[in-house]
Image (cartoon, rainbow, N blue to C red; front, side, top):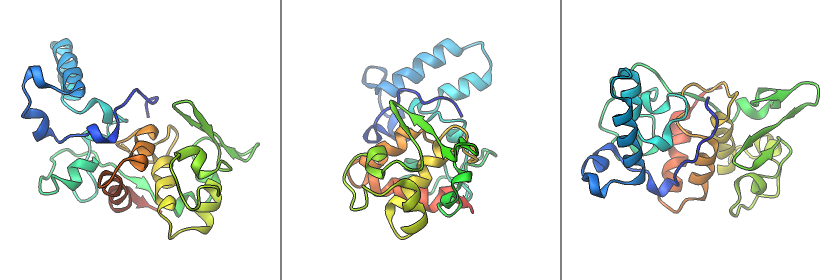
Length: 211
């Protein structure tokens, strides 16, 4: 997975149909970036042009070029607002369940010598012993509990699933074509409703595939 890029907030996520309805002078920043990338990529091959046609802020691995296990687009908006549209691409986006991450040795970048899984995104560095609120921010009734303790002892909590989504998004994760970077996952957690719940349902319903 590529290093985390400067990506937009969840509120700016739009469907392809919405993007197509804007003219050149009314394009969003993402659409303008795609247009510039497309113009620069002419003559450089179809794969580059195809990449220019998808939202810049969801270019994590090849997630937006993939589909979920049930054949839907591998984005929050694609499954929530365009659930009827089947995709024809062959790559599948899948993540691992919270249960898989109960074992810290399954976490990305686990070091068997230090017994720490040290990961970073944006300006944050954390391990399994970091508090939930220190990593995600916001307010949570179990925010003062460490990530690994939540994974082991709070399986009925929403935080249980948010942590799994975060781990799936990190470089070194065993997830395949996960569609969002870590900062985007945290952005979804901090987003206003209904985006926050839509994202949580997407991660729970479509990305927690492997145990």
